[in-house]
Length: 252
Image 1: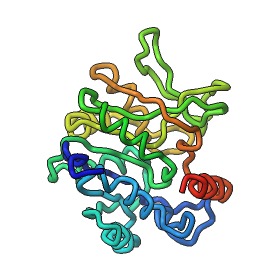
Image 2: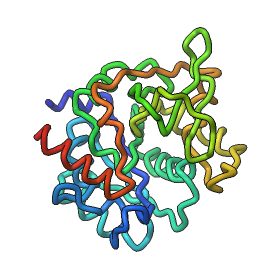
Image 3: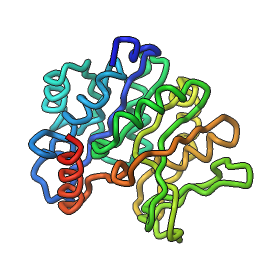
């Protein structure tokens, strides 16, 4: 990619305050090695052609280590601290608040364990995002963990989450843990949503994904098809870690 990839100016927010207990790791999740490199290092390399800075939302104990990983990867690091992981909505809100002084044209958000997204998918999002309040790639997959409901016009009107015990279709439309937000969406609409959002009953956490159908009621939301279902695999278990490592090995 050339320097033109950085126009418009983008900031990437990475919520990374979780411990990764299901991975049975002794490190914070974002520092767990994938094929010999920390997840955060993979993300820094993947997004460096597209973003001018990376905001990582970290637990205080991991703040310096994560800043070091980003600096070593040659990206501008900004660290926001989240002492207690209360859900992705709160983490994304902290990250967006830390990104605001950088005056970005777009705020990108990705989960720290989504290292399998293809550069081609990111490029399609970058070239299509400008007119949308929120833009994000999706994949159609069997036995989905997340599924977006749409109305007859194709507008997203709801989101179902398996971890909340909601009924899921056999085949569904899932996100890839990557989202592009306009400044209005990141700095105005997201705080408006967060002021009244309640914690999910099953997890007790405040989730980011319900923001998407909420904002779709009044602003354009764009989805783009991904290439491979394995792009959407987040690393939450040792089995998923092995699956993603094998996938990255085949690609590289």
